Amino acid sequence: MTGIIPDSTAPGLPGVALVLLAALLSVPFALAAGAAYLALTHRVVLPLAAVVGFTAGAVVAVPAVRGLHTGEVLVGVLVVGPLVVVLALLEALGRARRDRLAAPPSPATWRAVSVGVAAALLYSGVFAVRAVIPLWRIDTGVPSRLPPALDLALTLWYVLGAALVLVGLPVALNRRYGLVAPAVGLLAFLAVDLAFVQPAVAEGSDLVLALLVAVWPTVAVGLAAVGAGEWWLRARRGHYDDQGDGPGGGGGDDEGLTVEGGLFGDRV
View 1 (cartoon, rainbow, N blue to C red):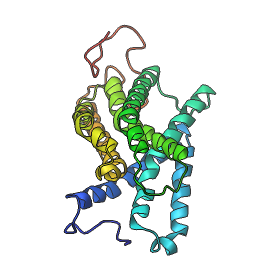
View 2 (view 1 turned 45 degrees about the vertical axis):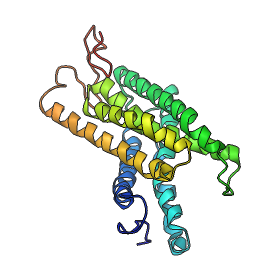
View 3 (view 1 turned 90 degrees about the vertical axis):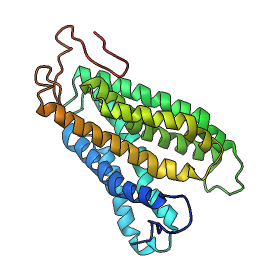
């Protein structure tokens, strides 16, 4: 309605319209579903409150949307997700620390979450050193609306939130449920990202905005959807019946020694 999606025949990067359309059709719904799940299951309410507050602000600003630049509208819709993910993790850890987390995960799930968060932190650090800081140092000649230090802090916050879903979730799903498809998709993405994308971002390429705003969230939602599909197929085949591996399941490795598969092979 506001002309956010450009005409596919307009000059520019090929496929931008399709990428933006896929992002707008998947990312907001995934964010709302995840926030609602955390609120209803674990009483982690800050993400849902942030989403509702952002939505209310957008509704109030509808009469003025026509006056905004379409890029600003697009960024506002898609960029809120990774920022909310960090808040969700902090609130969940805080509630768990104070024993106020409803339906707390099993120890096996906590271990998988810790591995996923560690992987996300590692990727965030690599991306910050190889891409964010070199890009931040480039003098583009365009005046910034924010102080440079605040701009860098917000960018790193966004990168961490995106990494928690893009990298941390597939790793955690592999450690907890042995899901292979999200891990394979993540490895393929990382191969392209490390070899081509990060150097391009560091040089200030035109794909920076499309990558951070549209590609990252869309790929993250896609990997999560593939993981959910694989878990559903494994559950239907009875793969988790003996171990109790499922949402809320206790897991079998707390009762004795077992062999479980992982991203880097089996372990006892």
